[in-house]
Length: 293
Image (tube, rainbow, N blue to C red):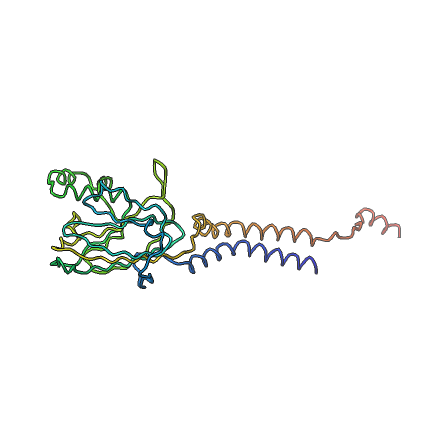
């Protein structure tokens, strides 16, 4: 009876070790906060910032980008409230350092400035990395140079990404709008050729007619912008969990039959009982005994 219990315990242990990793990682993914490109909630951000918030963000104008050295000193780990005015035919960005382990929800509202009301109060909103922000500034500086853009259009399409600016993950572009909410989470601090990660991200409020075909035209006046950034800690699942989750089922299909086969063969060998030996009489001995009688 002890042998049967031991085999049942071993069978349960093997099944648990194969099924538990896949089930555990699946539950972690299901119940962890998901970073989506569009959020349906509102930003729960107070109107007063923490004392350290002033060193976590900075405002940069596209017109004096190369003359400004204001960069955020600290990682963004607390809620932020900021409001500012974007001049006509210009753009302003909110720079910040986003870090893994947090989910950032942005709520941006755009209204008309009373002193110089625009014809069209809508604007374009982009989230981009620092290299793309630098290209965006160059694009703004050369917006009246037709020769540059004609030469750019001659490049093959697959090479244009090297010289053109792109929104973060190619999806965080919200154009011709007056209000938008979206969320984003950073998986890693990034990497680079000189020094590596911890790069800055720029939330750009665009008030001019850039080269994108879907963007809004220049507003024709100043616009007031209110930005709320709701920062929440989130469960950061390690990257190797995807490999374990995908590879656990094929491994289970290979290892489990082998274990069952080995246990079956071992069980068959243990149940074989040695039969009692007995001697069989030879035929010639039987014939001799029959004649003697």
